[in-house]
Length: 313
Image (cartoon, rainbow, N blue to C red; front, side, top):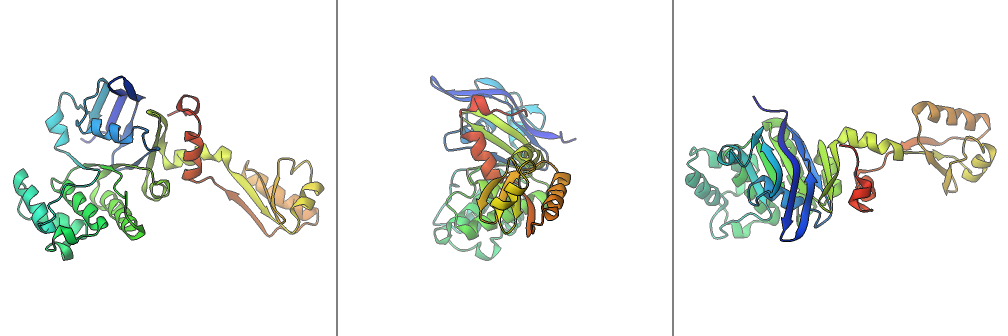
């Protein structure tokens, strides 16, 4: 039976020589999720993924994949993982099909598997073109095809959209969502493209200076953002409205001649404001709640030293 949490670290720490990189990271990636691992460059994302794949030893803490300790069951658990770390290693003089076929044979996988994974990543029509003719997006999808060959339950991807143009990013996003929804893959991907993580992820982890600042579902992040939400009021004279209702609009800020912003409290409070404004003879052209984006929350979390911004997990 598959555990509810496919990837788990406890008090994971790592150093390069005397320089600390990770500080007591407790990662938890739920099964069947797309977990977006966010952080500025140098925050520790790639190091964490390399430790999860056994490419770097964990000097302190534990790593568990599928409920098993990586240090004790390395071969067993890593056989269930597919990975794409940085740019895929490809043979440019060979076709896409021959690249996949070489790896398939090396791993002793069924003969029909090459065609299956090429179809899965949308490269069937270009399978017999030489890889040197591939765009960067096609090369990334071919690398993902290689990672999918053994039909892994877990995919670990380090910056899979790095360097892609908007079309390549859109194609990669759609592919990852399809792998999760239709094929039941659990996907852990790192990225600094916050807007893309917001579109694709079901869960988010934010790391800064080697410390995990936030971890949870997108819904939990939205609840955390709730305290930062605000109400926008569209009227004909924002300053006049504030002067007419000094108690109700004491915290309001005039954003433009006809726009007021104030902290969001509840739907009932929004209805009350509309009633008071209309009662005071002021037209209300729009009344809406503005929720901070993931980018705004990310920048807020990482704007100050990690020790002072850590959130409950």
